[in-house]
Amino acid sequence: MAEYYGVAVIPARPYKPKDKAKTEVGVQIVERWIMMRLRKLTFYTLASINIAIRLLLDELNQRPFNVNTCV
Image (cartoon, rainbow, N blue to C red; front, side):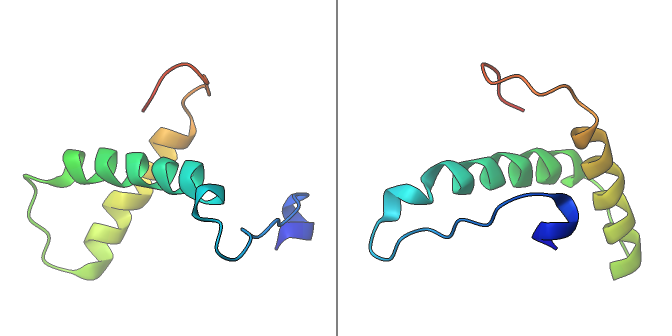
């Protein structure tokens, strides 16, 4: 997968929790943004919530990347 996307996989070093901090915060921001957008909706199937998440993730991925701002 990494070769397909042309990226290098650099795992965090054992017993070095600071190595993972920035990645974990990025995941947390995306998770909170998606959950905030879906919090008042009701879903009756797993497929329907997966579609909603996919649409929001696509929307988020289309935003320009700016290092100085958060999601």
